[in-house]
Image (cartoon, rainbow, N blue to C red; front, side, top):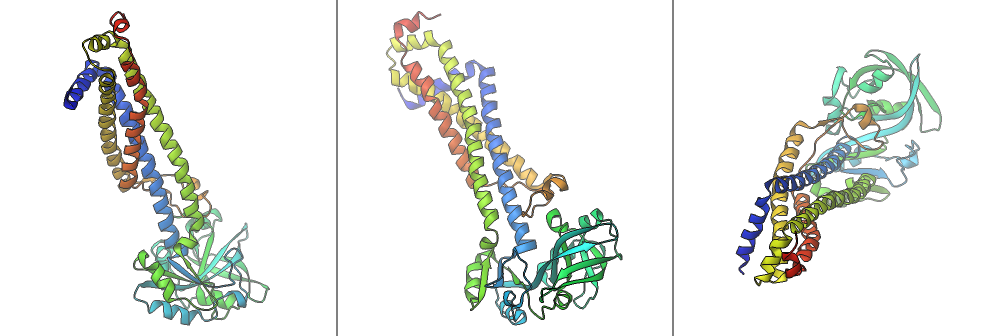
Length: 409
């Protein structure tokens, strides 16, 4: 019997019981939609987290002294870049570099008459492009000037938590390069909101020159953060800046924990994907098995008329293939459309929920992203597993004894 004929018979068998077939197709479609949406959500989190971390924290490349440890935020002379101005100029001379921003990091305690909190103090060159998210995120007061003295910026959420208003004077305590503790009074001249709660709640910003003077660090810097015009040039720029006593950390190095976490989470999600697929596949197998039980007498007649067991098996398998193809295709189209819509409007979460994710720069609004490669992989996986579990009902149908099957009720 021609293969085309099997397709026709399988299709006719399916439309006999339209309600059951439609419900089964709906299950496959919804299962495929869930897979595409889960994939888009994970892809969006990874992309957003990495992009925001690069934009706000790490840049594409960082230059540090080879003894500097970010966890300690050391201000010791031996741990800082000794000639940050020369290194910055050298980096900016490369055509691939969009921005080279020297920064000075230290820990500090911000205090008012009501309360105090520990946080990170960052000295920046206010004019540098790397700090555009802060500059563009100003919501009150004014941005810093390079020669500002006694002035700082706070995140809007930090200011709200501590009930600090623009123009208010606060106490800031920091260590210095001599191992001593300095305390002074600063005026809050502006509030910023970058959209990343973990950053806005834990950062005080002041001009680099003021931070260097206050900590007795001279013209030294903790790091020089580079933004590139094209992320693909990272290795090329890193090679060009190699020097003695210098750490050159790429965005992969700086986001290693995030990338590892997302890789592990991706493996976990694939386990969930397989569970969803198996649920759908078992439903398909159950539908086909019930169909075989209902048509036992009919299958016995076909076998008595000369249809071979492998042909009966193929006919039942084709029913599963039709259900899988139609359900996967429909679910893929609907899932991709829904994810594409959400990629434009985003999914809003509470700032508190997203701010609880430590060490990950994620905004309160997430944008899922459709991943064509992963969608194809999930579609093939769904089709393959459905086809695989459908072998049993097809095999069962092929093993029916014609005489017994013809007398079945």
